[in-house]
Image 1: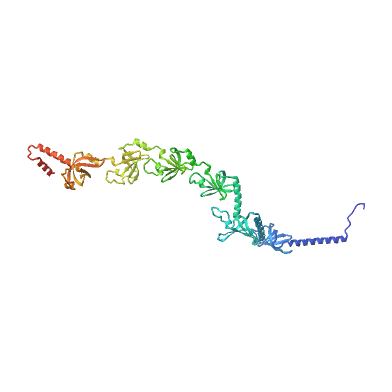
Image 2 (image 1 turned 90 degrees about the vertical axis):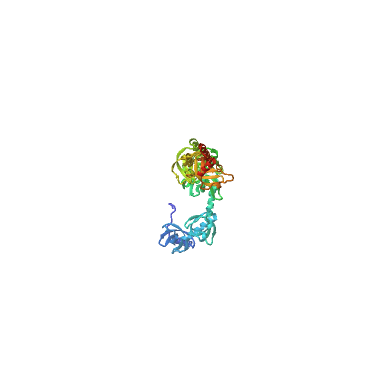
Length: 573
């Protein structure tokens, strides 16, 4: 074999042997395939591929030339052909038949595996709220077709002492508290996962921040009582009292959700899940500034922020307000309303009267920051001066007349006219009248004025009509122990004192005179200020005696005695 070794030509035996080996191989593969199909027993989970879908069923390739049928309603949506899904074998179909499989059961089995894993390893899961239980007991949460019980107490962390409310369809995160292997159910807690997540956030927060830190945050919510600001993963509250040093600061006008703000951490309370923040604390307390910079007597500029019936509030600095009491608004002695002099938003100068940082009160004066017009009044006005002015107000006892700015005089009703009962409605607000200044009291800021004094009083006119010593005839209108009253006409009444009446021993006035008796008197005095008229009957009688004696002495041929003449004279009268 010079050319080397060559292959022998196959014999008929060799061909038969090869056919036998091929048959055995085919048989073995067939047996193996049957063995694989037998693995799909009830309850097995198989990954299958969607082959076809009709109105009611989904056809799946389970592998190993085995098909499965699953109801379409077990799918949340119609699956696409070629999609791989997990199904559970409900009933095997053998070599030729199709197996009945369930997508829903596979999901339950898969869900239960997840629950066991989560329970054993303290892991979080997500599910959908399926049922709100009656009597407010809690909720049923669905996970892969399994219904889990969420007790009311485990719904979540209380906010303002109230538990959150869930609605059907809400997707929530939870942890498994206990399991029921037999019923394939569990008790879950949303609160536990919130607490765990919250604790992680708090641990990070406490490691990074402390009270007094100034940080930047984002406004997440605006409520009636303040702002919620998120710092990293936690929300803190800026209470409305900590937004501005101003009282009743309208913070909603100045802040919006999503705004970035700088805040100061005032307090941290992990146990109560609370962080208190402040914005106003980024600036100095205005009362500390006031204690250092202000003192009584200072004249400062401020802005009127509010007007009340009792006074006006003035902002000296942001968050620092003082009160101008009504009595410190005007130099006028009349009660005034602040609105007559001031308006909201007006910038004015004020004088500091007192500062009380402890009670946060500042007393201010508007009038004392300006020139005192009463000093001007002392120099310019004189008693008896006649002026003209406007009636600024009418009260029950009289009317106020404007002399000049913030200086008014009072015209009392009794000084309206010389009438005994002057007309109360004689003067009206806005009237322009002439008046006379009767008295000036600068210290007590009072000026008395009168209209009736512009003309002579009835007693002054009477004093011009009669002079001392004039004989006046009248009628007795009254008898008293000290004298008699005599009507002398025109509404005037004079007094004849007892000492000016001639009485005999033990003679009484009522014995000598009666009401209505006519008497002759001599005028002694008219006092216009006191409105008194003094008369004398005795002086009249003495004067009459002198006239008679004088007449007697002139008549040389008279044959009458003096007594006779006096008697005749008296009888004539």
